[in-house]
Image (cartoon, rainbow, N blue to C red):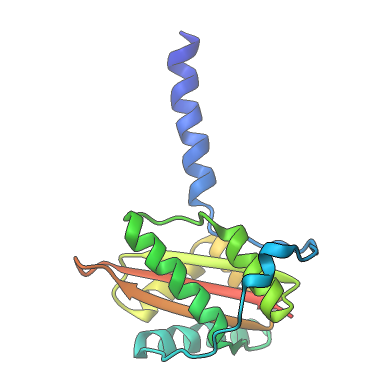
Length: 169
């Protein structure tokens, strides 16, 4: 009897853990030898949907009395890498967030990093509205950040993946 109750509870706990899209870490870490391999990549070309999402996020922040965020191409490159990873495994996940966070701490001097992800939305407004309606995503959008990056990539079947990373420097 215990096994049959434990298994569904374990699955529910795992799903809740994986579904949380609010990830902010404010503890400062020291650089190690592995982090020395990160380099800034400022070459990024924004698509219209990415520019629209950035504008909508900033409009939302300003409507709440918060500062608008400055786009940094390197953050968008890190976000793009995560979209590509999610597409390669065909799932929505925050896996490897610690590596993305360390990259942004090392290259940009970030002291806080957050991340919103989504998939299967078709417009900038629909994904931003979904983030606003989700307490964890909304907390990131309203967080104490100064910069951000956005990337949107489409898998071969036409499903769109979104990664919006937030940084405080």
